Image (cartoon, rainbow, N blue to C red; front, side):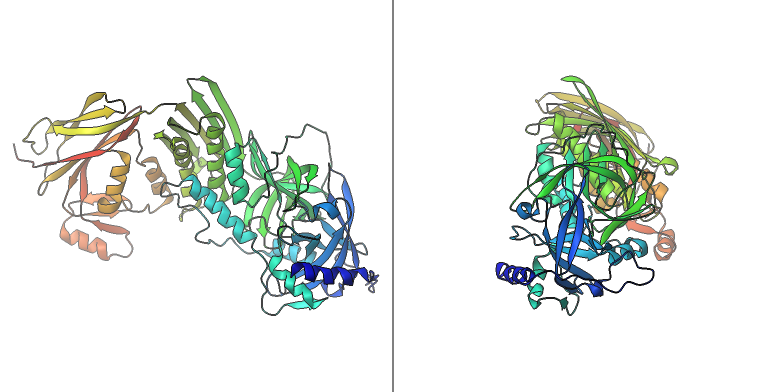
Length: 612
């Protein structure tokens, strides 16, 4: 059907191009009005195919589709000619290439006919819709299902899945908004379901091959081209951007490079408009705006693309909208500085420095990717690893989260990356305060062996414990090779308790499950309380001892108050101004010990306290 439709369109074009010379106003607008565009007009497009040289191509206008991107949203269709387009088709990285008629800007090349197109047919987003979206865009609206639940143990599949959902939302095929108005052959309507955003040319450098493949799949990057080389210092000192220049936005800079490149459409003083479609349709955001150098065009029957690299930062991309990305030239945005040290007994320490974009959705996702990539690039990906993860995440004057944990097993690297990224995810989605992390410093110590102990047996030093006395709990641990070790910890009994108590000796996972099921530590009621909660997260290199009462209690602002009188509990439960949660069990004593290995398992004993 598409070949037949394209054949009709190309025959119509072969009849000859019309010369459009609309009457010019006394003070002509730099933009060409959409309602004056007619089939057969010829526009001139500008883009970079190699290096930094802007080249021209022809845009033979086929027609205009109305109401395709939303109410009163238009898309101009054209057949492109010139340069390598006859053999490559529309190229990823051409997004934003400006098209002019009679020297006036029509809009940006932005859409193409999906995979395996038979002709370089492109959609052009009108420039007026681009500037309007960037200048008058609304606030960010949270959309469930597009992020990761960082309160749970996120996996690599969760992270790449979130990136996939974001990409699919931004790159969905066009749908009409009510009646589709057509200027041109009626057969244009048949092309609508096949038109998709061309897509930016993704840039990856220093990325592990497996992660590279998963990123390309998640971000909709076509094919598996070689990773972009780092450009040498070419001293290409340009004072500003020009329409048609290659430009980019940075996701990660430094020892690892990830980003996207496209084409600049329009420059109005310090303001820059590009792409003609969304990157991820985030709304307000902050990417570093960069120059870009195009090395070559990689032809593909599926979707050709520009092989490019990111250049120096020249400004800030502050809007990612349905019809454009936009920002300002000047100083770059605030970014998250991430410093990682990999330590191993197989060689000297390796140090890495990254700058990750600041965005409430993307910062934790790409921080996770950067950390996982550092581990995957230098450590084995098959077999058992043990990873000791230490570090801090600083929120400046808003506090700091300290990480001290350990992971072992075949998924140790991914689990360590999750633990380090969790504070970033929790901060990004917190409901109390808009906080921005400014620095993260991590040290990862790796060994290629299992480092864990399992709780085998627990006993108390007496069979008749007394109220208020200090007793010793003994714990038999067995390591993964079968060796045993007995450790002892003093525990002090409460002065009073109703009924028997449970003495629980547990690993982090078992304790966290119990707390969520029976003890319910409650949600933090403020940003400082959330920071305290993140600093008190259960850690795998700890052995936890809890003395638990079956009497009821109440959780207020994340703190459990056991044994409250019934009258007090009733008042708290009915007071809407106080966030409280009743619980059926309460902790009346807590202790823990840190180990240089992972602790697994849990044991409990029941004790009855007596008076002396």
